[in-house]
Image (cartoon, rainbow, N blue to C red):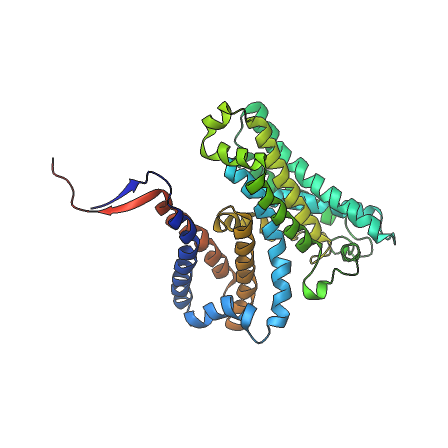
Length: 360
């Protein structure tokens, strides 16, 4: 008989080991998936994990790590605030889109103004504010009417996607684009500073993500607010008795999460993407959930997990082009990572007992 026994305290060993075990199990299961598709599993795993970093063309792939990893890290850091406090923001994708639209709107309003050093800060403020306001909708509804922030934030993603398509086809459509959907090119604003060199993958999104990692680390390790966030998630009743305001915590966590997602969207639309289009969003807001949990909701862990997930994005593209793997297989592979992480994470709070069934 196999049974799960509750641990007196969560296992620190399994808490640290579960992401590594989950990655190994994902690679094993992924190898089986690739073999079922008629591909050499070892070659596929090498293409996904090895070639982007150590392959002969890594000089081309390494800048892409920064481009892919920066929005994942920034969004995951914001999500980790709420997840630690038991506040579940599942709609970061929508906040990412709205932040991009608000920031792009400022850039297009001043187009083609030459004072780029002035426009970029305004775009950053607008992007952060857009994501913040969009996240405040589920935040205020939970505080005032006790609604479920999971459902509200998730449904708002689809509203944001429709709004984005409407803007790309209407108000923000390039009048010189010969009828094609999409806005004017906005990448001129992102390169406002000469030391931000996109040829090496370095852009303002990377800078913001690194600054956010530093601030999140200080918040969780040195600030009373970080202690209150962790206390609210681990012992809500104790947090209430200690004077922590649940409403204020909800608004802070959701607002900060939305602002970081909005900044990620703005730096993407003003940098790597360069314009508002009907397919601008690529699922960073949902993938960041995997990154947050894979990084154990710790800023440094999220930085490492975001890098790993960026490698799978780039390696997946390499495997698709060189081995002919379908894009859906790569998405399934990434989904396996969260599945195995949640499965192995059970061992953090439970231990497996094997023995004979007791006879009454």
